[in-house]
Length: 161
Image (cartoon, rainbow, N blue to C red; front, side, top):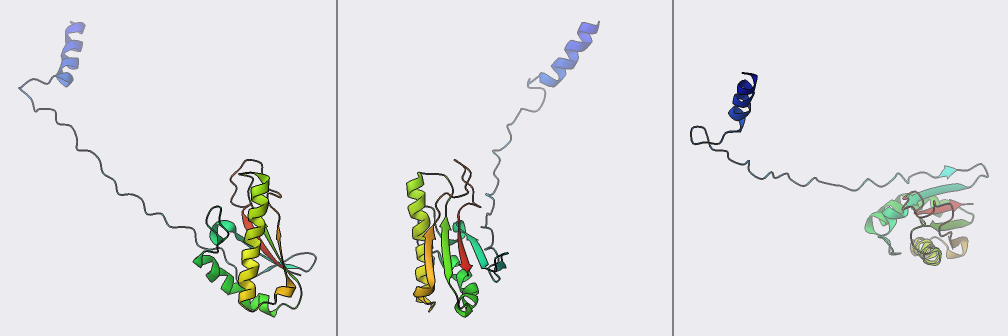
């Protein structure tokens, strides 16, 4: 008796005979692609004052440059224009230092970090900041965790000394 009840329960849900509705597969699902917008540029309107009295503004290289490039992006120029008045008003040395993550060879990253710092220095010089007051340096992978694509390591620092 128990076997008969079990068989009728199992067969009731699994039958596809002509007595019931035909099984029709569901239409293929379609979802719209998500809209992804880049993170907004970090605020650059203020410099951070360090214990030694220097003022430093840091911006991620991801905002300034495309991957593997030293050409300033249009959004980077807009961000740099916001801190330009403070840089122009500064009467001391200006040190621009480029950094990279540790992906790629140390030699490539060292050269890329210097090219990026030089691009920022050259842009500032084009905006009337005296080139004799600016130094561009490349720090390469300094401080970057090994073999990690770390966005915090990819940056350019502008220090007013």
